[in-house]
Length: 323
Ligand SMILES: Nc1ncnc2c1ncn2[C@@H]1O[C@H](COP(=O)(O)OP(=O)(O)OP(=O)(O)O)[C@@H](O)[C@H]1O
Image 1 (cartoon, protein in one colour):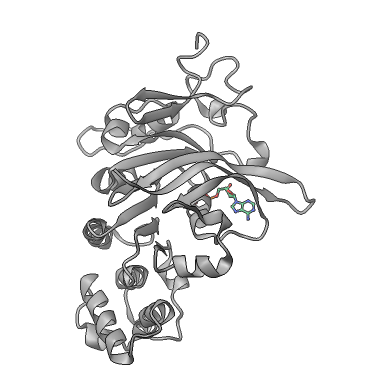
Image 2 (cartoon, rainbow, N blue to C red; image 1 turned 45 degrees about the horizontal axis):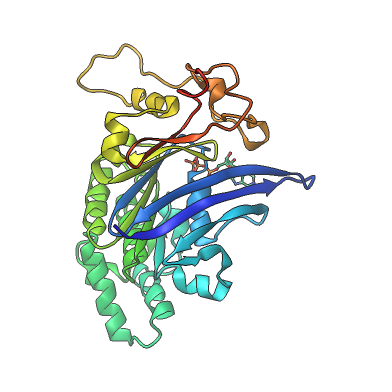
């Protein structure tokens, strides 16, 4: 297997109004293989979006780099000049955001916006070639009558159709990596299923990094899973391993919180408490406050990462020092 993108001990934080710096992502380490789909899961506020925006180098201005590398095709993206990054974005690596309405420009036609990506990366393409390619993309994502639709504006599309347009825009240059950040959250269930089908199809053409809090989606689409909690990777491995043999108490909690249709449940389980904000992160395990298996000392020092089975890693004190 060939690594397409690799996070190596990547850490970053943010600067508050007083100039104090707080860590957000701590030594994040994982990789995306060529042609595979990786799911990044965790509750809201766990650092999933910060991780993907770091790849694109589209972070807010108060973010401070604290160490590590993000290697793409042998080069550290964090060291690339901005002009080179502009060539990477949209051509090598593309991103689909949560809310298509805010990501599309309301005063430009859909065809123009998809074409814009091609004009930027392939300045030699002529008008007709661009039009053909745009039609081809709209067809690929399942938009009927693409010749007509390309002259329409975003508000003339339904939510699901807008999300498809966003996906068409993201894959028009056939990126090596498509990052989809909660691509189905704003959609209703039937449309969600259609967009997921589309993701399956796209997976055959390149690598996919799917960010979601929905484990059901991950089990359908992803080959590998990274579980994040409060800016750390607490567990990672093949989807099969993670679903069949979850080891971190947080992953087990996420699994227990999946609603089941087959078992009658009186009440839905939810992990007690909430994800802490960076200013309140514990020095040791950041999940300790919410963990049913927390033992003495868990809060004091950062847990070690161990390989529980080949390629399945867990960052937890359980099993160490008599815990
Ligand atoms: N510019 C910033 N300054 C300070 N804190 C920030 C900034 N951007 C994000 N954060 C904080 O970083 C943490 C991680 O945020 P992030 O958006 O990556 O989480 P997430 O897991 O993607 O959540 P969601 O699913 O809600 O998007 C959150 O606590 C968030 O408040």
